[in-house]
Image 1 (cartoon, rainbow, N blue to C red):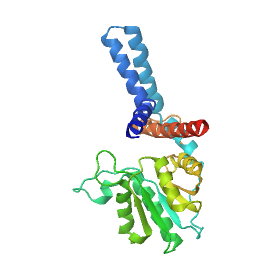
Image 2 (image 1 turned 60 degrees about the horizontal axis):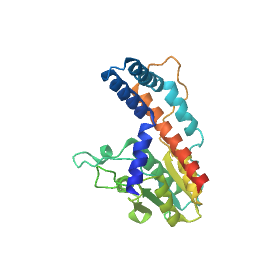
Image 3 (image 1 turned 135 degrees about the vertical axis):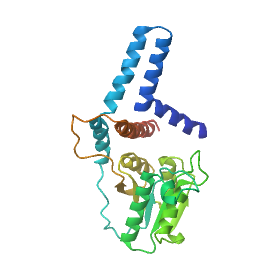
Image 4 (image 1 turned 30 degrees about the horizontal axis):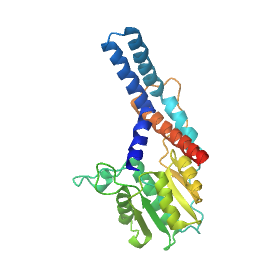
Length: 255
């Protein structure tokens, strides 16, 4: 399972914008060194063209908005909810930094949204579920880091469920199934990630209520905009989700 997880990460990288640009550029430089000027020109031009294309703000924003627009923000009105599941994302252990700097931006927004929902439900029996593994460079799981933020806001340990083992959304869904069964629950994750998360959770027979947060798309982007690396990142994140959705549907079809 560990090898498959790493293989999936590596393959995904090389079919996303950064990977495509890097590979095309490296192949171009190889042909340049070996004096295959025509092939070098083709691949270096391809690399440069991909960089220009994906660095345009309109492209990344368009790709992201197609995903983020599928679910509206949570209404905070359903008082019958018993569970709120906050999906993990990322952090970096460093005892010399304050906790606010160790938690990733997306992870913090997800956690904050989960806390807001918990507070507005005003039900002492509601459970906040935090999942997410430590990653390669950390000793503390992302689930524990996020739960620490919840504790700071006054949420008691008896209202918190932590599992730092799940490495991806599928494993998070498997764990939630063992906790909530067929009951409806609030699912908190980034708006960009919500379509794939909903698909995976529903495939496990779960009944999630979407609570998207961490919106990154902008309502209007001018066609005459200055290219930026940040736009490449947006496009890469969006394509990562599209690939994940495609893979999930393919697996569902085959199985």
